[in-house]
Length: 276
Image (cartoon, rainbow, N blue to C red; front, side, top):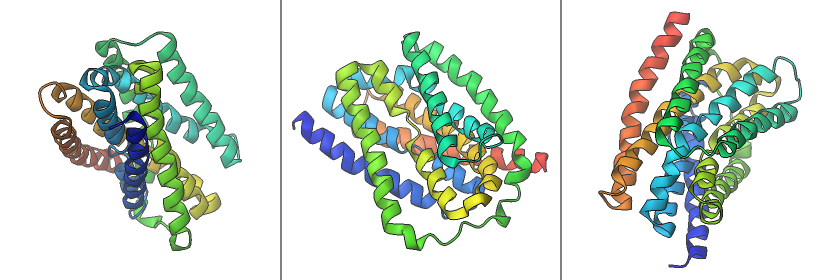
């Protein structure tokens, strides 16, 4: 199959995957929904199509920078929670948070992070910040039952289309940039927080000004779950890709991330309980 066909297919599959995962995440309260949003989505499709279109060696190399690159998602979420205290405009909050995310990723590119141990060290440092973040918002998270997600049926079709386009674009861009710029660039684009971004936008539309009340618990769930689940997937995929087929590596790595997701959810619940 041609590379153009892989790009088209990655857009369709990636968009559908992000729309589905986002839909599931918004069916629950603030903290639980945030945790569902942290289950691997765009990275699953991106890694699969990079491996299929450019080979296992390239896909393996993409995973080298990925843990550090994905740590940028915590930078994005922490920035949103911090900026909201000083900036009223949601659009401006997003612009600042995405700019800081871009600055973090640019540093990875500037310092040419191509060693897996360094990438993991960066991930671990940011994970520690993510845990502190979850503890800080534990009291709010324990009250998630008081913030049911409003009825969003009137936006259902437009919301699904918007998420599919965003998710599909991120996956396609990751595959394309890996081909054009190499594994380092591909790994960075694979880590773009597409699900997080779409989830925050939808909830802002739903809650209006009350959105600030749930941003902390939602973002804390996203930060901790993503750092554990998504990076677990990337590590497992890295370990499996040369010894198995692409589909087998994807399936086993994804199942492994779900196991970690469950353990992490229990951990987050306990953190919330202690904070309360």
